[in-house]
Amino acid sequence: NLSEGYIGLLLGLSQLSFILISPIIGWLISNKPKLTNYLLVFSALIILSNYILIYFFYDIVGMYIAALFIKNIAHALFFPVVFTILTYDLPKAHFSILYSIITTGFFLGNTGTSFLSTYLYGISERYPWLAAWIISSVLVCLSLSYCVYKRIKPRKAQSH
Image (cartoon, rainbow, N blue to C red; front, side, top):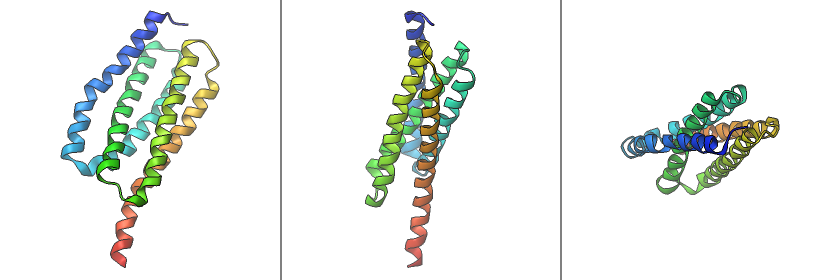
């Protein structure tokens, strides 16, 4: 188990990614609005691969810091993109899909936090990790389905 000071250091270092990546994400969303779909899927894939990385390297502290840093980059990507879609690009038909994506993302954050707690406090990490992996897989599928649905819908409208 790690000391409280070391745990605080790890969590503090992992938060730096928000500060470093957020201005870039804001610029991309503002200047390249067509990238929002790709950023959504990319962030979901980062989250999924991050939990796989944590599972295989959970006992290496340096790798764990890197995994937390990467997770926060993915969250810095995910939430601004989702809220941009919600505020500017949301036909009512898409709301249920996006609501599923948002709630899955929040649930994944809670599961990831519980996984972190199990590792730091020496509890079995198997079940929280499995839940995080399943939820992140669902997040990837939901994000991809949103992008596919958004592409198919204009084609259907043109054929009528």
